[in-house]
Length: 424
Image (cartoon, rainbow, N blue to C red; front, side, top):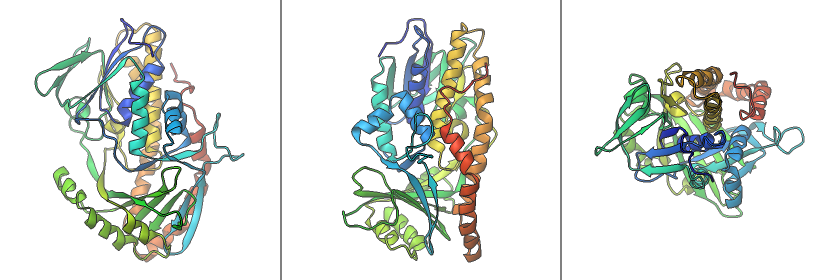
């Protein structure tokens, strides 16, 4: 791919996760001819992390990844497992509902059509990293801890631990919920808070004759949480087991690391919560999982500041919320919409300040994020501990909710933010 253009923007991205990497791809993809930006990504870890659970990439997420060049790599390498429909179960009584991604003719939704893909975070990141490494204008530097951010009318400078620094025209804060860009510069008082629920996950290797109750992915509701069971590769020889459940706050990040490191205690907790399942494979899958990790779900307040004059926050750094089925796709849409707004500003000759594209992006994005935030609160209440009556009510409400929101969700799956009117 083309190298950075001599007089193009110099962009600094904090965070080498999925948000930072896709932001770099989007800024490159949408750059006007002769204006390919020089992009430097800085990651605090000593190397890019390619670990984590499994995520559901909805049709709108796949559309963005295809456009950014990462989906073809996923397909070529055989990453992930296609999802025609997601199944919902009550572990005590059986199947409650389905949520389909197949569309009217069975090929998917949108034009061109996409279904959904269950994929490990590690494999998703590997594909995105490969797409980034094919771009001559993007560099990635790991092991860089930012200690100070200085901004002037002309540029923004990052000071790193050890004394070195970097200066650019624009800083993208894509460094997650505990964002340095937010906490050291954009809005220091807006700190993450624990949602009250945690995600416990592991991977269970299975034999060819092991019987499961789902086609690809199942959400299994219980009185004390929700267990996701899903294939995540074409071979079907491993099942992702992820429990979203109410867990008491331990009070500190170090405390959570200590609790999360005890895999057997996490397994015991899952067996306590889901061990009375009437679905035969649930207990064996929990027992088969080779390891378990426990991750507390942190969130940010609904309202908050996303930018200064030369710094913009994207993804969890701006609007972290509990998982609600589309979180990853929302991040990809963030990156594409912002890149389109910035490109329009470049095409207009980079007038005055970056206020114009920043405001255009927020006008496009705030309402969608607010809706997603409200949806995520429903997830927390749904997976929180409930008695017999509360759980019984849930088994009636969940199928109705899926039916009632079907048209809204499909409309969003079909939407293509690469072509939507950005309003200026």
